[in-house]
Image (cartoon, rainbow, N blue to C red):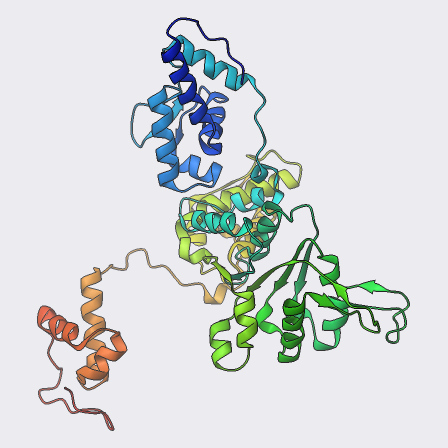
Length: 444
């Protein structure tokens, strides 16, 4: 960044230059400056910046506060808080800003990653996904083995590709294997490869996925579905970092990063002897949990609009050529989304095709599991958390014959807390002389 500064007030100018260099050395602050000054007629919310840059609210607010203090941004009038570009009143500071904006911005590693762009489409106003983004950035800094936990369709492969593309192995190959679709008979040939003539039909040498992932990343999706035999063979490779092709005699050294994913409770599988404990510790050095769509239901309308815009773009239509009416969005909000983001995307695309006009109505929405969709009763009275707790505690006590020891265990609270709740809510047995359930210990 080259800028001509006045010769007078050398100390003040030097201090100003140092402050400005410090300001723009942060990728987030410099990105905010360029973004604001490329759209000088607009004002943006903190939430919008969070989604655009994939950063937590506190980080964005701190950076905006520093930009406002320097004079390159200001808070727009009104509420909620919105920010817009500003030009510093100090001529020297204004020249520094002009010089910075005249330079071509360096495209960050994140912005060059296709998987990051795909993931940013999955981020809404709920900070759960932004926390996942921070975990991804942390995992990408090393070769540590990562285990991703999350329901089907929550974006586990997208996250795996992000970690790969942001890591030092990003120039290497990314090999994805679906363990659920891999029977034992094909496990070795698929992962280790084979030599010509190793078995009937092996007409030529074929390298396996592990060999192809050398200096890159191996992604094992649904690793919880591997058989015990396959687990033992995988563990051997992770320990020795060497493989042999089927029918071969040569030991091949491999250097790959392992990322695994599952929607199964692997810790429970370990306790049930369905998953090797030593392999579990190998694959679970660093875990990332992806939330289900229902866990961030407030994001559903925003995600639906984004997916609709992507559908329009993919089909050669203007991104704003179709919209979703509120009735359809209400249906989306009441559905339980067992397929998560993937199911939402297919549902939006199906509704866009079915809609006779440019507006997707409730009648155009078809779910894959309509029978399981909860019916929302708009006029059903809602109860407070206190009333719900009172009803639940009373129901547990009644079912256990007012056995307070068992009730406290079921409610996962101490007996002292249970006694306090009974007094607080003035709970009494429905029968004047309740008797313990058969086989139950005394009420105390």
